[in-house]
Amino acid sequence: MLKYKYREIALVWKINNISGEVKQLNGEFNSKHFSLEKVSDGVYAALAKAGGGALANAGFVDLGDQVIVFDTFNTQQASQDLRNAADMITNKNITFVINSHWHGDHIRGNQTFKDINIISSETTLSMIKEFHPLRIRKQKDDIQGLTNYIESLKNQLDKSSDLELQNQISFLCELKLSLSNLELVLPSQTFIDELSIQGTKRNAKIFTLGGGHSYCDAMLYISDSKAIFMGDLLFVNCHLTFFEETNPEKWLEILQKVKNLEIEAVIPGHGSIGTKEDITKNINYIRSLMSLVLGKNENNKTEIPDLYKDWTSPEIYHQNIKRLEESLTT
Image (cartoon, rainbow, N blue to C red; front, side, top):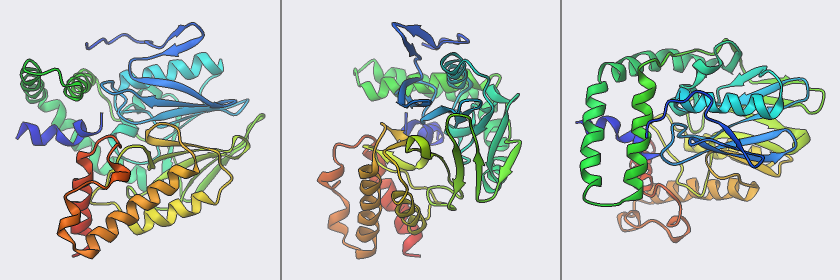
């Protein structure tokens, strides 16, 4: 039961609760939760580290007179590092925070930014309000269960030196650390289709084309920099994650539209910084799985195609097939 309860959050990936853990080392900023990469002038991606408290990617954009943070990670330890990094690098106050969608690894760090205007789509706000209060309450009420599960994993680790298991334990320790004072902070402003923000150096557009990965997925497009933060609409060199709410046809439609934008750098929800080629790979991945499921060829479902064998989180591949079977064949 414990394994099932925490399996979902552990699939995707010590305790040191030091506020302001981002440090400047040889001109670079370092956090145990994420690596910080400069995408272009004023645009920074915060890429989640395995075993840290981030779990998903985030980032920030300096528009000149305004600063936007995109997504807030899975724990407040990681989001505090993100805020410190944005403060130090831009030397400006953060103006807006964007929640790309309602999943926990993109919004549970909101409390670090509760003094700032947090923006999401109306649908995302609705989903956060509907699902997260109960989820967080149950996790807070079962910290002992999480502790027992971590101990069981540590016992397994004593018999092996499996790196993935080490990362899983480290992440779950970060999750446990966050629960004692975790506060659900809701977006304070919503938009329906898009919201434009004009800066003195560059402009940004927050927009959604509806739901593909989740009920509603928002992106942040900086046309001047030819860069786009795509949230979980894009995965780079790791298996996409399908949920019951995922709409694969709509997801394909969104990716095709984003490909038509003038972009050179794409920041995914999971994985490294990519290009338009990675959008094409995601399109082909979704089409491949849909074709596999609709073709009803059981022999082809057991082996991961060679194109995706080197992608991280391979266990998600068969999980995706099962979810597509449930959604496309019923």
